Length: 314
View 1 (cartoon, rainbow, N blue to C red):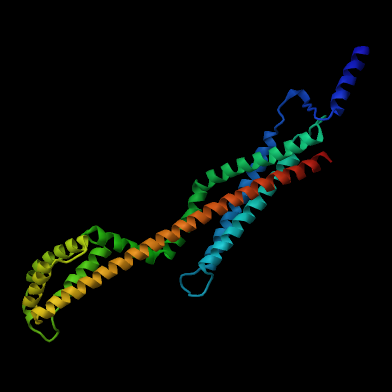
View 2 (cartoon, rainbow, N blue to C red):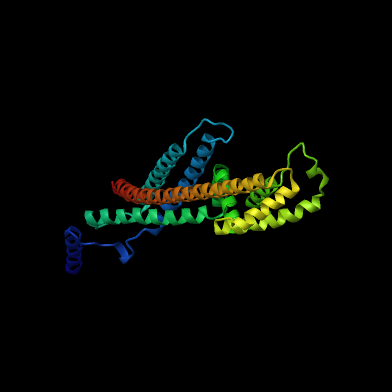
């Protein structure tokens, strides 16, 4: 009896000593079952809110009408919805982890507070990993397909301009927007007066030979940035031979046309650089706000786990 009383007094002394942790059975202080339960709930709610936000976003924007939300408004709405998603999902996950954990006996209050905070943080971490896995799976493919479709519609014009500038700058003569632009310029050089019968008397084969040669000359000039005078005179002679205009007018047509093509290329390059810079800024802002939203989610999950744990022990 004396030994039993001594052991009971030792346990009682340990239970009332501040800072002493007593885990029954010497088991782990982490309730992984509660953590995974809360993480699954948080990941599922996060996925639902992401899909809902995507649907609301596409319903607010329509390519068939000029009125609607601006890009800045949509950006702020996306940031707000992302923050709300993290608050709601992380809060629910942390609260579930706190309420479903094992009740710790003979554990100091400060230790319980730390454990609940750690459970909430671990729940947020596991839920974030689960969300990434789900979003990169079949469900994520559905969501990302809608986002890519909207981005394709929104950036169709910019993409076309960028492709044209790249093709023309590279000097490619394959079928494409840039090639068509250069071909149209070369064809316009040999365009005769509508009242002239000289162009109609020439066969299509005869027109293709100088046009192809002029195409190569123009592409080389675009690479170097200048059109040599001998090439300009040669092209003007070909134009004068096959149209009703004079040599001087033909040379002026070549000079003005080449200058116009160079201006178009510079404008396309500028538009491409501006689009790339805008995309870079948007990506940077999105990454920063994603970081802030994740921090909000981690804090909310930890706080709600402490709240749920106190209700569990009440």
